[in-house]
Length: 473
Image (cartoon, rainbow, N blue to C red; front, side):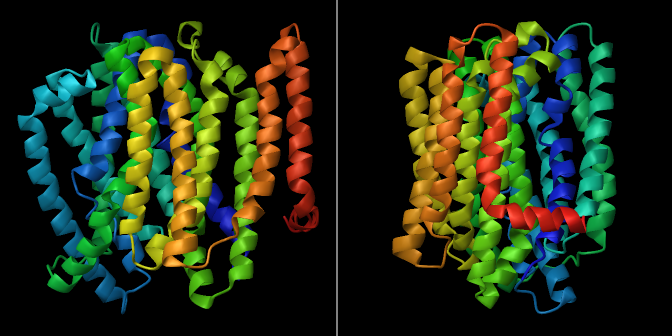
């Protein structure tokens, strides 16, 4: 059975990594919202959203079988040869798809609201993301969380420094300064990542690895795109149907809410090696114990951001950027439901039936896009936020149904997770009625009481574990 303290230790390392990369926009909000105009801010956020989609699309996920094969490897040399074959395939596919993107730059720009020159910059920036992901794919199953965190933190600091320097240099089109700064930092990181990858790669091309990669990775394309599409499609739709500045305001609320998404990502990444150990040993009791604790951590983080996210945004950002912060509780509901979806979608990878991941996320993606197209014209950004949350609800329910009735692989009983989720919904729903209290301090005091009460309710079942954990800390 995994030591939960060890899981938390790796989780803490990945938290640093995710705060440094995925939450770079969050930690730099005060600077960027003062240096950039509202339209520049919107363009950069749409650029980052599109690049997130392309990071998986341009390689067709051929590089994402690495971490799974680590648990099927014969020996270390076998793993290194697999990494070599995977890298060769991913590079070839990337070059072909990047060429197509460049040729269709005008058309892609029309769809996303970006200029052709900005579309060209997606290629080098996406390449940086792809190489960084390969580095993580190699070292995550090895439990080298500190190594990953350090490299991600270095990329964040370099990216921030270069971006600010370039923004100050550009008198107009300052958004180009931030984008070029991030690319320059990425080039430096490619050199660093390459040294780490070189120790774990033997450049060969073996057909047996090709079959494994195609069988595992290609069905994962919709899954890899799912979260990015659901998070970014609303932003892009707002930018193209309303205005680019509003897309930036929407992005700020989504970024702050995304702190919960970071919790989801880091716990998933930190726990993944232990998940395979539990399932291989059929230690389902240990599996469920960890799942319930991880979900409790997510719910507490979700309640915290729902309760105080608006205040965080008002402190960090220029006032001109804060008009959409009221959307934060809706976004947080979506990120919480995404964690619930993770619980059941892991099993598709375990049983090598990743096409079920595709089925689930395609359905959720279709629901998201349909809802966005249907209700954004009428309800604007509120409609986009509701579509975001409902899409993850659909994903969670479809994943549970597929586990329970189709693949019949062991999964944590839904009822065990619905109980704490119901408590979360009860407490968080009261936040929408705080308008009855007059004055900031009255509302803030009620928020503190609500959050404290929620933490007690969620943590009560684990009070003995928490006490013992604190004693041994």
